[in-house]
Image 1: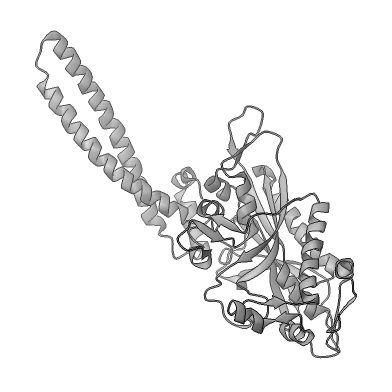
Image 2: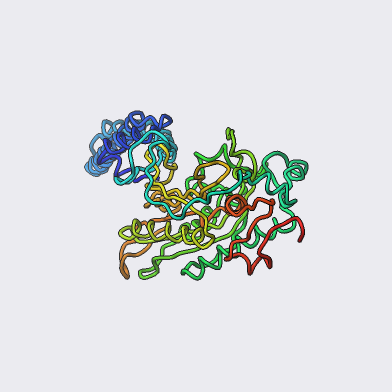
Length: 425
């Protein structure tokens, strides 16, 4: 959530930012008008309360002197009625302002490329060279079905479309990727967390999934619970409503969790295979920093996400998202996109974002800059470290062999117990 004082002091900043975001759902002028009216009412109420106090004091003084105080008594009655009416209007306006404020996305950092869509994203760097195949590479769903390790029909029978059952070495590969990611990140200083997969609405609001993500989340019927769309929600909310003492920051956590998303409206090639599923596994990286350190921390966090792909030998590129493509809560985001041979292009496998104090204000996560100092809001960051199913898909496509088998990346062989994935375990 944005600081309303910042908006009041520089409304043009918000107007420009929303124009750059191409955010058609935010009526900035209407919001500013309501906020102006709200402050006018607050000032009027304070003024009328001061008048009423003066009149009340005059009533007391006159009565002591035995004088008629009926005029002052009528004045206090009228002022009381006016204050009551203004308070009622203020209550409605304040609720409307808070609701609209919660729906306003973050202001992009000045370094974010200005653009209307993902076509305006800017490539920052590439790592690795896409493999030149001597044969036509197959998509991962054909590889997985051919090896008997991905069962899309069983997933559809059990749950529906966009669910998959992994079998044998396919299940082991998914487990191996999770273990490799967690081992790598904990070795790099992240504290491992195993969170619940169910979260409440306060947690969803704290990270910005509510209200904007409501249609994309799985809500448990007649409860305040949601299936978590990302472990960012659980791990960030570990510190909700807390004040960290001086010297506590920075903090870095990694967490494996299953994730659940409705993916409403998704279509096209990405709906095949395991790229875009309703249920998927992911290892998440979350950092809490002092404001002055958050952009350096974003670079570090992105490099940490890159390390696991480098360890697997998967070619990728890093792009800076434009203002038209950046997420609701983010001030700046890098996407890491892995090379998918059958697609002939790079596909997103991780997003690494700095939210500045946007989430911390919603979740009230604060720290003391110095012992005994007034609490200030932390900056929060998170990144996929990385999406497990998409990593499995990338491994199957990049390490496939002409005979239909798949080489196991060296970093995973100790977890897999084999160098080759074939239909003969």
